[in-house]
Image (cartoon, rainbow, N blue to C red; front, side, top):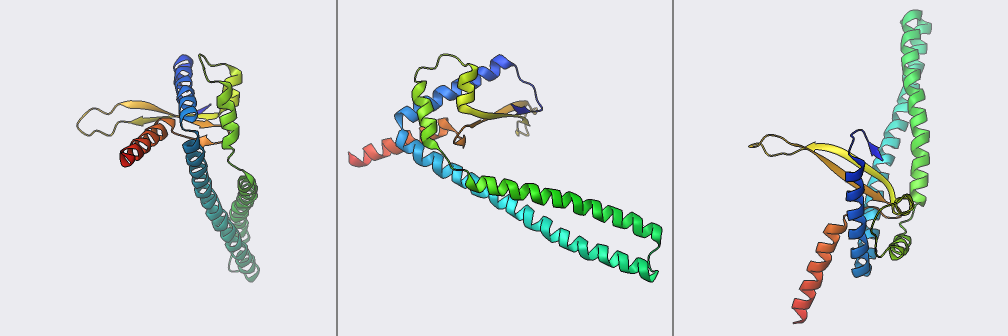
Length: 202
């Protein structure tokens, strides 16, 4: 559970159970659509996140190289007398600390990028889990472990300028194997496509 905001356990369980029932209903009824949508969505999200991490990685590496040049100049200025020992120690310590932090960040990002590039969307494993729970009546720990990777809870305010702003909680469920997925929206789109197809045939 990833959140700095509290929410009653019973309410959260009801929301998760409702979402899982929705997932089971959608996957059972529109399995082919689900396979395509889940794969496409997960790949788009992964590519976007990877691009952001690679950009941060490149910027951090560039800054590390810049700091090498800056620290070298500080040393030369100190040797030539342009920069006092006290000032040199202060500045070099600050820049070296920044460089150390960036080096650690670069190593962390490299590892994340490497792991993320190896990850694959495993829609079939999610479908296999769905088939085990066609009539889900209540949640238990084993069901949560099988379906849910993590849950994000955030607080937002209603945007209506003419009404008092109301704080509401948004909940995002990240599923095992497929990531975050809006089953309600997917079902509506599949139903609309099916209806359009029938109309076209008629």
